[in-house]
Amino acid sequence: MSRVAYVNGQYVFSRDAKVHIEDRGYQFADGVYEVCEVFHGALIDEQRHMERLARSLAELRIDAPLGAGALKVILREVIVRNKVTNGYVYIQVTRGVAPREHTFPEKPVRPSLVVTGRQIDPEKGERAARKGISVVTTPDLRWKRVDIKTISLLPNVLARQTAKEQGAYEAWLIDSEGMVIEGAASNAWIIDRSGAIITRQLDHCVLRGVTRTTLIEIIAAEGLRFEERKFSVEEAFAAQEAFVTGATTLVMPVIAIDGRKIGAGAPGPVAQRLRAIFHDTAARSS
Ligand code: PDD
Picture (cartoon, rainbow, N blue to C red):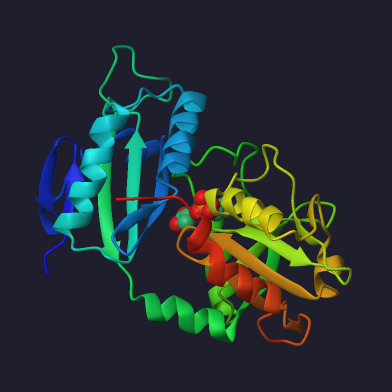
């Protein structure tokens, strides 16, 4: 099937889709993005993704390319045109096209908007979750405002490549004090020996994951103990369970960190349960 993308006002076949060579996203990574899961044809936690997109744009002083209603229509159209039942939509907004100059364009330019959609075999994620994933730790080389979801992802790309070359799926980024920040494309969690579910508190060094926010609500509803604080790599090694969260990974059990087994070296019961019930609580909008 030919894939279809929305590019600045038009639906085009992906193979024909083009952006200008002086788009500031292309030249400066001057833009932001969102990845929103599609589950049984419905968008998961759409509202939270739209709120985060609006915040990222505001932080970088990029105008919203369209009103919220128009963007909603485009997301649905991309889902339908690409026959996505399970997968994701990708939304990218850049500051727009202007002659290359680091400062913002003198004259206002129209932000560029691209939306794509992709089908993913749901069984693939389920298989990975049944097995559990491995992670490796690596220093965090990113800038100091990763709470903004920018398309500037080179350190994340390099970290994930390092993970892949070491036979792992994800890289956990570590700060100068040996504390775990988050994954290269996911939030990082552990469950300590007392059963407390722990993830790092929010600041400018970590992305406010939408899956993370929804999972915190689920944890509260389940009556489980939650601690929002820093944890060290050493604490992670000693944890009973570990997992990562993200829009496409959902709740994904971690069974090894830097080659050391976590807990029994198999997906833990709490992570498995949280994964199983995640979609019951997440907001669906079709
Ligand atoms: N990544 N932290 C980072 C650095 C991320 O890139 C992501 C998501 C998350 C989890 O956020 P959410 O739960 O809202 O997906 C945390 C997306 C999926 C990506 O870049 O593909």
